[in-house]
Length: 92
Image (cartoon, rainbow, N blue to C red; front, side, top):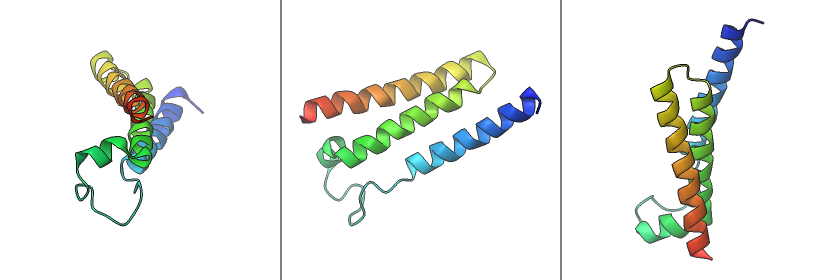
């Protein structure tokens, strides 16, 4: 298998992971804004979805060849992961 084919398969897998992470239903039963912003920022389920989305963005960025988009994706992923860790720490 050549490198371009492997890279495209990894990118498709990364996009699939990212889409599943951002579309995850943290816990069904209410709308996103129904309980207010503090619920979204303090719920462990919502923080886990934010962390998964951050990991997915970082992984997708690893497969982008152009430097600026790669750095932007990886930076956004790290920021999302760090934000979820900080919010988790504030929650405790």
